[in-house]
Amino acid sequence: MLASTWSVALVGVEGRMVQVEADIGGGLPKTVLIGLPDAALYQSRDRCKAAVSNSGHTWPVALLTINLSPAALPKTGSHYDLAIAAAVLAASGIVPLEALSRTALLGELGLDGRLRPVPGVLPATLAAARAGFTRVIVPLRQAPEASLVDGVDVLGFASLSQLVAELRGDPVPLVDPVELTVTTSPDDRAGVLDLADVVGQEEAKWALEVAAAGRHHMFLHGPPGAGKTMLASRLPGLLPDLEPADALEVSAVHSLAGFDLSGGLMTRPPYVDPHHSASVASIVGGGPRIARPGAISRAHRGVLFLDEAPEFAPQVLDALRTPLEAGTVSIARSELNTRFPAAFQLVLAANPCPCGMAATPGAECRCPPTSVRRYADKISGPVRDRVDIAQAFLPLRRSHLKAAGSDSEPSARVAERVVEARGRQQNRLRGTPWRTNGEVPGPYLRRGLPPPHGAQLAWDALDRGRLSARGVDKVFRLAWSVADLAGRDRPSRDDTALALAMRRGEQPGTLTREVG
Image (cartoon, rainbow, N blue to C red):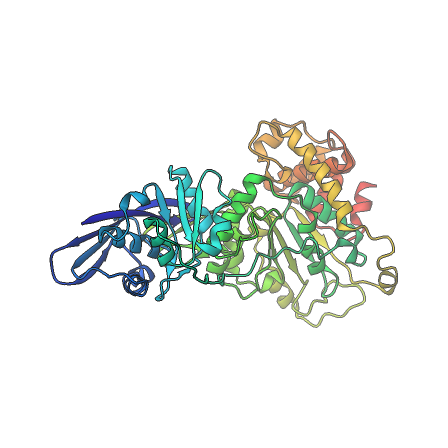
């Protein structure tokens, strides 16, 4: 009396097939669950027993051993419930075992036998399809999410009794499905927030356009109320739609994080703006035994905005160093190492001091000099060096507010120029693994592409200690982005001078003087 079914163990966004074996042997009535289950999974014995009984069937009155194989792989989560219940029913002869051939089962069972939604259905379905499985059974409300994967038949059921009836060829009873209550849909502000709403700050808008075109990181600094947050929140509206492969990868991460994908794949770049009280685990990812994706992974192929950046814990900001360079984050735990994608575009915003008035014309700063320096040093040098553009803001004047909306460009018009610039980059980088200027590594930037005109400006700044070696590469990347927006095949000297000024974070007005 042995039967087996299949489910999926999720390690990061990668899935591994897990065989669920149920053996009914002679002995005292007892249910034993083995195979390194966590606490939530270990409790599935009682959930499945109640669900089977309340569905009109009998739980084995004998020694029941349930094994999750491979036994050395830690198992976590409640999505194994359906596979465990189906294996027990097959071992009891209630459902035919052959009806579960090449089928993966995902879903949490309630005590009444109804199927409840679980996180990670999309990456689990992807893993099953890659392993050669032809059918996936999921909670009814998550069938649209699983159907996003091609080549797999998806069956959605509202309860265990519906599954049993389908496998036995009996009439399927009507059961009210459990509503999706995992998480609300991801934030999509592209159609709501428009760049035309930002008053003044024309140079900052131009810097934002350059950042969108080349996928460059930004640091916005200036007094409160100058428009830093408004500008950053409009960056996703300038970015092009995600490519199909990226949309699938981004959606898989959000599915694992518990978001509702019943509306289809995420086609817009995500925008994530955690509060400055966030912990390292919430930003980078973490959790006991097997880590879960953090904010930087949820911002994959999108924007991560850290408002009031100096208020974040220093260890949180320093944890961004490796992901900014590698585009992935690896989280080590005692039992498994988990890797998540984290190719995000970082935008930092900060005031010049705790009161916000330091170095602001016409304002009086009441902070001691040591407080101002301490506040600025909260963002470490290595983190600043990884940011391409440093943009300063000045407070708005009456003339700016009176002229609000008179000549401001909408996001749609700027986004058209960004798409054209991205197209030039893709043509230039065809045959390489990179698609934007911000991704191009230094060696290829210096040897695989023609040097920008005026490159000596960056080399001279390096010799004077005003740029690091990484900063030289940042200037060249920015010069290419400026040239792409202008439609030039190679950056001019003015493009390089402008890129150098953007990299150095000159005060507003300096960019024009630098080019002149």
